[in-house]
Amino acid sequence: MLGERRMKRLKENQKCDGDRPYIIKEVVEKVYMYNPNYGDDRICKCGHPYYRHFDWMEDNYPVGCKYCQCYIFEEKE
Ligand SMILES: [Zn+2]
Ligand SMILES: [Zn+2]
Image 1 (cartoon, rainbow, N blue to C red):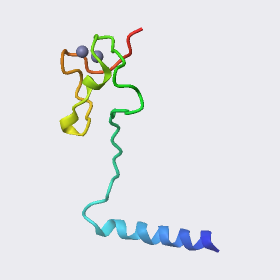
Image 2: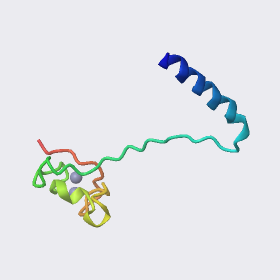
Image 3: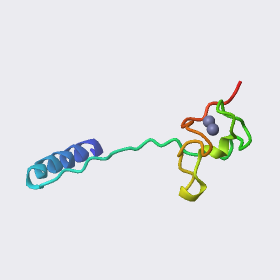
């Protein structure tokens, strides 16, 4: 029963598609965000600590290392 009703609604939606100038496409953005559980003092291969690879002023956006050109944090072995 429920399945049938859902199918019907789907068909109605499709019927409307031709009347709209735009269809909506959902875009999922993947951003490498700061992980507070990772450990701020871990050292990257560039020699600078983990937290320096994010911008505290910009919502912890991954802007890359503030001291050098290192963009992606990789822990030093
Ligand atoms: Zn680095
Ligand atoms: Zn660095």
